[in-house]
Length: 116
Image 1 (cartoon, rainbow, N blue to C red):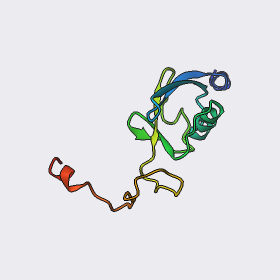
Image 2: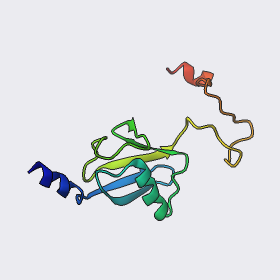
Image 3: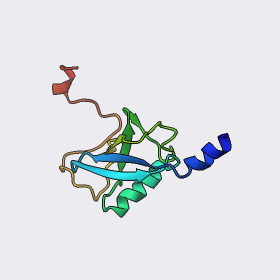
């Protein structure tokens, strides 16, 4: 019986959605439990959505590139969040204000520290 269940899980499909926060899009995807985050990125590229320098989140947890949907407990009807990855330094092609710079040791601006 267990062998039958495992062989049938190969054919199982989930209908999930990916919320692309910068573009305010909610894209439907059909995935398998064994698909990885890299597989999701490939599906998004085929739909014309760039996922470069963006991170997937599910249940407030950042997903790794090799995490399978089964490992992170994604179910049918789940919604994943795709947001810009603030931990990556900007490249020369990114459009930023000239005075803006990125450093990992940057702290909150003084105006925000009083609110913390």
